Image (tube, rainbow, N blue to C red):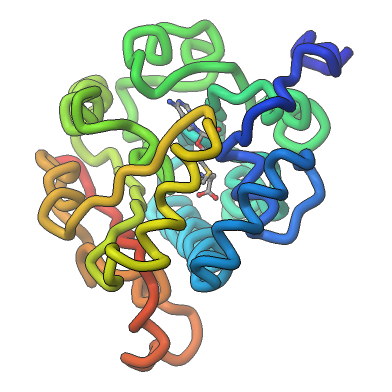
Length: 272
Ligand SMILES: C[S@@+](CC[C@H](N)C(=O)[O-])C[C@H]1O[C@@H](n2cnc3c(N)ncnc32)[C@H](O)[C@@H]1O
């Protein structure tokens, strides 16, 4: 039995799960055969996925640090992923141990590891929730305990919305969360894109692995303009919506060749 009440039998190991495939890309061990096979197929077709996943994770760290340094003391991290240190609260707590973090994911496997890695000192919480149901997330008791909607909030939708299909209205969902947040709140968002690859070859096949293998969510790549739309009502911080390694790098700026195959966009906005 896990901390969230799941038995090993309740974890679905018959279909690849995006959280566990991502864990495999990051070199983690919290995945099953079905995930490893699908993720390895993606890597074989599209080796860029590994540096892309790592670059996305590092963007997330820099963005969280920026939020904490800007005074944000409460964060909602939806699509948390399987814990991979440092997690959001660990990065934020390096700046201020007062930051409260509510983690949300719809995959029970994340819940399984949340107890050991995401919870602890009372100022973090985790619950199972689906980004496509903003009402249920925003009204959840864990959110009520941790988040004060009269104070600015950091909302993280990092490497998440590409698992929401167009007909599920991802822009409308982001707007529903945005409308619950006070001015001065932040949106941290990243998203895969096909803008840098030919999708009629291996890259397109890699994208389709999620669907072909019956993964619990499929992948929708979006253009720069489409991802930019998610920031409606937010002012983008410099340098805007860019490939993750180019978002405020903490080392030397990436060279154009380093970015040529990074099929991801990332940005941070502040609610106006
Ligand atoms: C690629 S991982 C990203 C993890 C982390 N945010 C990061 O960027 O390092 C995507 C996560 O989103 C979760 N996810 C996918 N669809 C979701 C949904 N509809 N609601 C909530 N979480 C979802 C997956 O279970 C997975 O943990």
